[in-house]
Length: 361
Image (cartoon, rainbow, N blue to C red; front, side):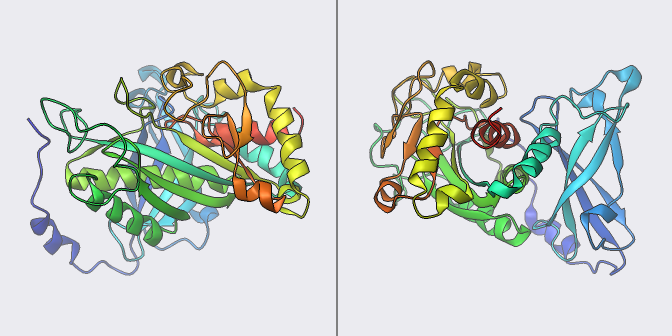
């Protein structure tokens, strides 16, 4: 049995109703206690705030989001980043929030709090990030979207950046997501079909500092909302299908000002040397279960490195760190950390990279 789908034509006549100019619908979005799930709820404001600081603090029931006990369930939402709402349009907004506990301390899954502090300390390095978010589309029964119900599609090979009804499944969802992100103000850089059929990727960035996490989390929220409209499920599971199928990652492209300047290859090599000394710490930070999810993906096969070993190389997609060939030829640019899992918290990923390479912590 599939998910119940309502008639969107009926909804349209209500969305076309005039909205008072002095009323702004604000969808507050936050990360729940799993560290992966997103929640949201809406409130009406009597005007459109001019800056994020003017959006009011709000609260929610943390006992229903795996974040508090029922006897002391109130949690606080602190607005930190604002985007245009592509679903309600007009002057309505989506408001990304940090979560704080009853005692005003950050919730356990509020990784943004310390990430923002680290980015402030490293701001003179001007750290830039671009994350390649891979994801898989599922039918409501949990089977990959478009796959035969009683079998498997042909082996991997023709699907990556593929074209044709027998090569790609779900392009409508991808196109809708891309346009919605652009409308919202999310810094989306591109998209493509991935190696496993029903698997896709979008890229966020380049973003400096804390913006990387803000924009990727909002892009994920929009992705879930768009797929909801189509009655399709999005999973960020790093290995959604066992067997000879690619997993899903969130490769993190990273540079500092010194890496981007002439002769920056030396700074890149220095950063890789530092990263090599903290492999275990990075693996723990690169998925919500401290490496347990990535164990299924980082096997040394299917364009991955082994989770147990650190490696680096030019144009090597089987290494922990890849130096793009063009970067090696130019002598400056960026590196690609291929270890983060698709369900990583980008705040945790970017924080540990900056701690290791910029702050020597």
